[in-house]
Image (cartoon, rainbow, N blue to C red; front, side):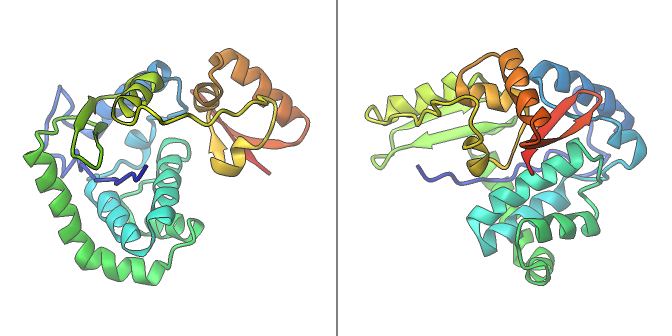
Amino acid sequence: FEIDYRMGGLLPDWSYNSGGISKPSDVAHHWDEASLYYEMPIDGNVWLEDPLDSSYPSCIAMKAAQMQSKEKAVKFMRILREELYLNKKNIAKWENIAEAAKNAGLNVEKLKTDYDGDAKKLFQEDLNLGKTLGVRGFPTLFLADANNNQLTVYGSKPYETYENALVALFPDAKAKKFENKNSLSVFEIYPTLAPKEYAVIHNISVNEAKIILEKLSSKGKLDKKTIKNGSLYYRK
């Protein structure tokens, strides 16, 4: 499958008001609630300590990263998210974007040139496409086969919903299974994982995932970053 990531840019600036959210401090509580609901480690205090003035800079940076490498851009997007959600870094600031790009193996100098140039145009094209397709929330996944048969999955759904949509379009598709739940092999594909992610990949409960990950951590095979709403595990 080819996956094409498009940026949605929910927050142009703080003249925007949606669902009672009109200032950064409104987001802090919302993120803490979302963290518990989705069982993912997120610290909303970034909106109190160093709030972002817009989501556009990180979206433009992602388009600049894609100009270099689609694979590295995906890695870059994950690093940006972790810096924002766990480390409370303001990813609207260039110095934090540059650090994430360096960690993703991107050419930071070229990224800055593209960020100031063509990436803005590419991001605008994404915004225009979203409007054309009637996208009103994120994530929205559009799935299509070679014959342009299409399915849309709107919003954050259980993993099975996405898998079922793929299988509806590609009946012969088979999911790759990780047989050994206690193995570190999954970390070769996903360098960092929260217990919820690990649980979904292995089709086990979140509690079972936490026990396995804690055992691997206690044996010194994994490191972890713990914040108020959970932990992220990664290989040493």
